[in-house]
Image (cartoon, rainbow, N blue to C red; front, side, top):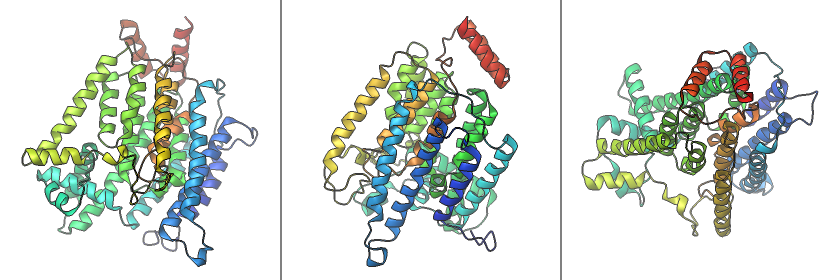
Length: 461
């Protein structure tokens, strides 16, 4: 950071303190100490110290200088409790009937200024830090897609198992590589890859930001709520910790835009299909989204999912030299470790260590029961869909094999939608009749306040 801002020194610990002060100053309701908004803020802020402890413990192992404290164990224990509280909050969201309007302590212009400033600081932070290896490998895979070559055979011989990024991440990486080649000239491959990683990270976060703004303006009927969600997303330390890990942000961005397109089952199906092509957890969202569109666009939603899946698989043909190459790539993009419930001394289980791996099995069963109960909900509205989707993504953290619990960016945008949303009981799946087409036209071209009043009047009639 000091390379870009002379004399400025900052680290992850400092960002935690800055974020705490800014969040309290802008969002905390001092005149309503026991409001739901304040409780949600405390839950969001309490995630960051746990992540900081885990990060500190992984970079500084146990030794006499730190009094023998196992920061990793403490951090995962903290994260387990906090994630459980967040999950409980999301599961109970539908029972919290009162959603009073709570303005922020800063106007829209001030929040936008802080958001732009925070984004610039995050970009500067990403520009001065080395990119993570997993994102570099994704860029390499994107370059292979552009060049239509297959190096999976070489990679498979070098490693016991072939781990390739999902086809969605590969497609986004190819776009970033193409943009890098268009604006930067040179033969330094490492430099070009680093720039492409930073471009991909910025594009992923911009997709989340624009999605939050759109949902705030279109579905919530208040641009101020969209600006508030964007600001809190950018200043939270968990965003700063993993800002350059685009593979964590891409699926979250696609899900946010699927929420924005809830009146269009085809578009929502395409976006969720692309999210499933990036990482595994969107697969568990499909049942509740299918029930949301049940008899109101389920066929369009399913058809879009199938089409997207076929399209993503077909992209592998561009880099496959033969049938064996295609099979290796297809199997390599699937995270088989997710389905591994046996002991593995080399795996980083997150909540579960090598001796307590067996507890993941009953947790996974409870997770599936939770999804079934959500699908049996009598009334499906947008507010229940968003809360249930966030709860499912948080729930995956409890049984995920690789460092479970630390992937906060998977569910942070959805969690912000739950925290800031007003009452949305009037937002239901489309009927696809002439009346509904007229309502969609009004929702597109009306103002934020008039949209809510028009829809509410229709519901009362």
